[in-house]
Image (cartoon, rainbow, N blue to C red):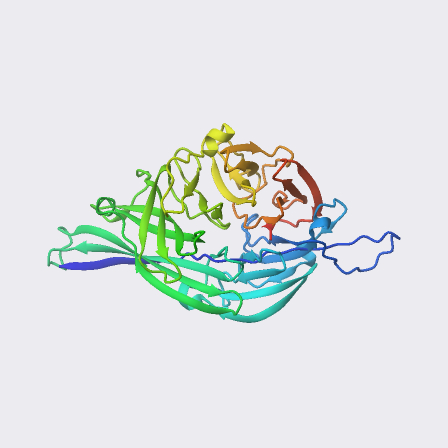
Length: 454
């Protein structure tokens, strides 16, 4: 007789999130009076995460402020987002995305009474974000604490996902005697919702069972987290990044220190969200689900995906147009930077195949706030090279693990760089030349930190 027990549910959400931008003007006559923000080519929205109970936890809410890309490059521009910013609705850190042109910010509230509520705003500059369209809740599909991603389909669609897991046990027909119980497998059901960003409505929802190989399941492996849906170039497959966990089949207790399998991605038909399959990399090992920032991107017909928790340090993996991993593409961040145990916490490529990567590594310091120090590098997806951006100042309290957004204008990437609780600056990376420009001043407040640009 088969029975199920130890039923638990892990919910993880993905979707597309709007980006934020701000504009500040100076008065040539030195007259102190308010001025209207003026947009040049693109709004750059700066996001800050306020401290909750501990420095760097980001649980006190999210504020945003928008400036022009020109003002973002100007060291005389001052951005005090924590005192003058717009409060993005969310009980904790908001999950933000921006439109490709920077004129719209998309938000899904995280946790609390409004958790799972989708809203969008027209960027007007400064703290002015004008609500547009209607709100819609995705909580009935993916819960009140979703992570979500905006698919790269011209700002049309967002997607959120979760996984629920259940251990299957065979008790040989003796429900009162567990001594002979035998672990069979752990079933992972993946739920996916797609959201119409234009009309603020649910497009589709499906829940599908996603098995691993019989050998992997018998050993106790299962999908414990899913994240970062990415649409392929053809627009007919959705890639869902994933993390594996493992139980001891003899005890059905969670294990640690187990063998790390090849990185995996779940592939679904799109837009039906059906017919799941699993692809496995022989190049990278560990997880592909990322954390707060988008972890995989379509470029030049393929999808490039970072992995985390790899015993040999993070890799950037490639999924070809045939919807399989390209195991001839080997891009080790350890090898490219000459470091050990690198960990890509966030990254974003420009249209030229050059990308800015936020990372930690085995030698990273732990600052007074107790968070691991982060760094930035410029990588080339085609040449498979990486260069540390030494013009960006280092600090033991430069915390990047919760980094969410990288605003891009043409081939420039806009970064927020400030240690926890300390002032900093915007830095602009020209991905063509590798040059770094120090820009607008960022005013911080106690225990808080910046989580990127949109």
